[in-house]
Image (tube, rainbow, N blue to C red):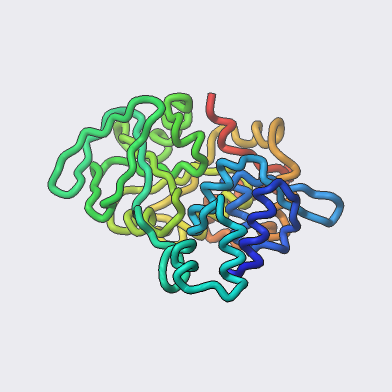
Length: 290
């Protein structure tokens, strides 16, 4: 990682407003969607500013950085400091982050019996808590369970306040009977979640932001590997009403340059993409937390 990029992260964290061009495009998208960063549009100029330091620190840690040592890290990388200092700050002898805790968080709507290796576990986190699956390659769930990828952390940690969403997902994708749901989060970002999804037979439903960047996350991180037979993007029945009444035009404008003409290989999403372009707005999934 370049010292100049880490210096830019440090400036953002200190409250400065920086242009999009200071950051890789894919990382700007991540920061906007879940990294505690907001976009500021003035004419043709688009800039980034941290609005939640806590969320931004989570993003930085997902990239192997120590939020309170950004300037020190940049100085080490740009100077003649020792490899030992780089290892101490960035994790290993090749200056990449060490993944000390692989896996992903999971949550449930109601009690769900799962297997972790040879052990049978009844998952039933109390409100305000969820579980983290570290040994994910040996994690198995009932064959009729639907895996729901919940993009934003507020939705993930407050499932009891989104009952209508879960009922719609069960109705749309559950077939006969009421399919149990397992909620999963892609944070900390890695390929662990999609690797696990490729190893199990269960169907995956993506519940994310209803904007161009959210659709791109689904297409590039999940649909690309699972295809139409194993994955789908959840579109609520009232999404057009919400887009029209409460959608963000600023978000649409900020995302249009990068995603406005993206290919959408999942034809089931074309009506949603058309709605987003028609209203020129995007809608945060947090709006479904009642």
